[in-house]
Length: 202
Image (cartoon, rainbow, N blue to C red; front, side, top):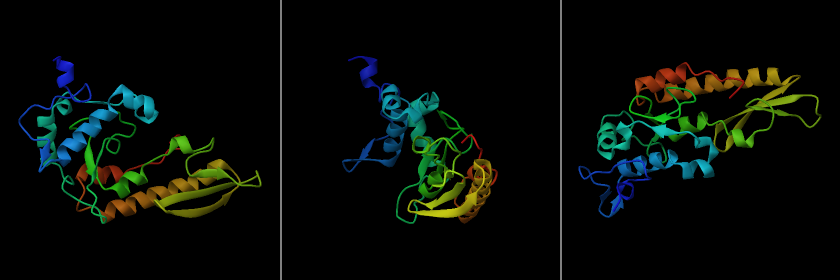
């Protein structure tokens, strides 16, 4: 059997130091690791172009290292109000980052992850948070507060003015949510959220 067949997603090495299953079910550490490696594989890039170029550190290619790293991370054992485990995030500490690593990743709740989703593929030609009104002469700004709730921010003469309204509201919302989770978050994640800036190129 070739070494490649022994690898996970053709990238990672599981080893035998830590289990992948408990009571017949895959454990959280292994599920996270395998999902991360999947995003680093070219077959994933073809299906989800937003992951194109994503990779991971040499340390994260080792399941043993990743398993031990998880045990030391704030938020790894946390759950949100719906009982869902917090998610592994690579983009918060370094905006636009494409490297999963021990220095770039933190655990955050789904609510925070959703706040930072840009949904580029679902937007038109206008800046994030902005759409042209039906009169074709003005622009509307709005911002998602939760998955099912969106806040209307007003109509504006230019797309730039509408974006500025979105930017101010979104940055304030991110700070508000960050403070709700302050005691639970990794301090680096909290600081990144408090300093987060929405760019017109987002």
